Length: 179
Image (tube, rainbow, N blue to C red; front, side, top):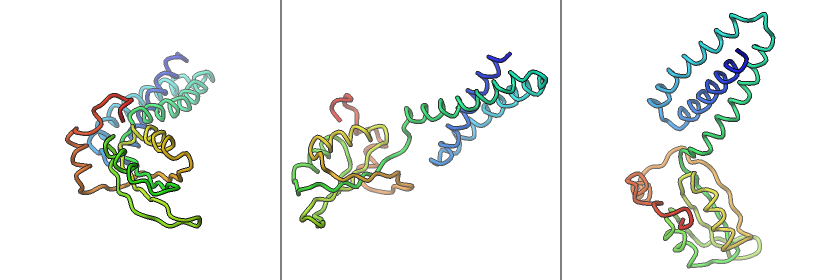
C-alpha cells in the first residue's frame, strides 16, 4: 500500500507540475486534458490515504511522493524545454563574423554596436528554442569567454522570419553537434 501511494503521488504531482507549466506557456487545451488525468490520479491517491489514516506510513508515503513528484515534474519539464529563450549578449569586441556564424547555426540574431565603460562592444539579441539554450551559451563562450550574457523567456513573440521558420520545422534539424 505504501509503495502504491508513493508512486501515485509521484505521478500526480509530476502531472500537476507539467500542467502548471503548460498553463503558463499558453497551452490551454493540452493543460486541460492533462488536468483531467491528473484529478483522477489525485482522487485515487488521496482516497487510499484517507481510507487508511490510522497507518502513519501511508501519510508519510503521500508526503514523500509529493516531494519526489515536484522534482520529477521539474526534470520532465527541463527535458521538454518548452518555449523560447532570448539571450542578450555583450561581447568584448565588435566581431562581424559572430552574428553570421550564429545565424548559420539556426539562431535568430539581431546585433548592433554598443559602447561600454571600457570601450566599444557588440550587443546581440539572440532567440532560440529553450532546448538549444545551453548549446548557445557554449558556442558564445568558445568565441568570447568574457561575453556578458543575460537570458530570459519572452512572454510573446510575434512576427519575423525566424519564428515562422521554426514553427514550420525548417530550423535546428541538424545533429546536436551542428547547432
